[in-house]
Amino acid sequence: MSTVTSFAALSANEPELAKLRAAAREFLSADRAEYGWRPAVDSWLGQWDEGFSARLGDAGFVGMIIPKRYGGQGLSHLHRYVVTEELLGQGAPVAAHWVADRQVAPGLLAYGNDEQRQRLLPRIAAGRYFSSIGMSEHTAGSDLAAVQTKATKTDGGWLLNGTKVWTSGAHLAHQVVVLARTSPPDPERRHAGFSQFIVPCDATGVRIEPIRLMNGEHHFNEVIFDDVLVPDADVLGEIGNGWHQVTSELSFERSGPERLLSTAPLIVAAIRVMSAGPCDDRTAEDVGDLLARLISLRQLSVWVARMLTSAGDAANQAALVKDLGTRFEQDSIEAITDLVDRVPMTPELSELLTTARLHKAVFTLRGGTNEVLRGVVARGMGLR
Image (cartoon, rainbow, N blue to C red; front, side):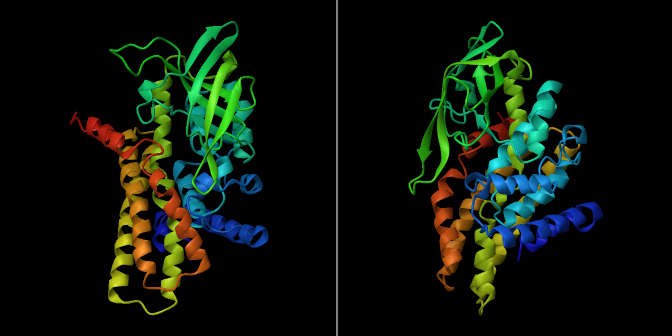
């Protein structure tokens, strides 16, 4: 069982997507057999495998929405969605290229200049260029308007000073895309005066300190910028347009299958164990409830992908996907914990469940806390 059976419904009536899904499954099956990686919970955060990302890029499964003139496949968000489902459903080690492919590439296409696109997009599409995102700070988590990192104009560029936190993969990435304040705060316009900068992680003045999980895993970082000189060529988009740019990019981060499928390998492993023996009515009902929720949430996520494909504004819907999806991920861990009390615990299931429990609290925090996202949805509906 490579993924939840119903996932194929997206491509059932679209031959091109069906062919792409089959190709992705074939690639993953062969790659896993040859290189021996194992399915993992939260693979898009914690499974950093540069070799896998390069092989995936060589097979044409990275940079799918990047135009061919920049080295990509020139396809749609729906094409990327199909491949992403297969990657996450099998818990493949995708963390190295994930942020660059998911957020940075669309950001460059929407706001970057051609020099930046020519310089970065072909390497992203090849699965050989890795990025992190510098948004959150110690005093500015989901309230990004409270960001205090500053960029001050100087000859030929900008001097960057400040600290970012929870910066996933920065210790291994080539660059970090930083949101910084470039003009004084305006109490009447809290979201004005921000800009984005492309900063090499090995630039002079950049210091990266690890933030380790309780089991010693190292995904997150604190990144300190001390008079880092950022050339004008590495300003992303327009000075002062940073807030609009990051909120647009967050639609890609918040609405994707990773907001539903971080625990998919756990669910699949549990169902596989249950399928090997007798299943009582209560267990069948619990599994059915879990899959019904997943299928329903997936339909909303697919709808957002279709909106992004048609260049529509899906910020509110993306926030809703992230809220509902990450709560489902947390609930799925509790549901599987209850279910495994009734079936034999295999080593694979035990390992996946242990990791899921460790990561559980993070699901509803990263990408904006669910409480803040509900405010985004309420404003979008005109309720506040």
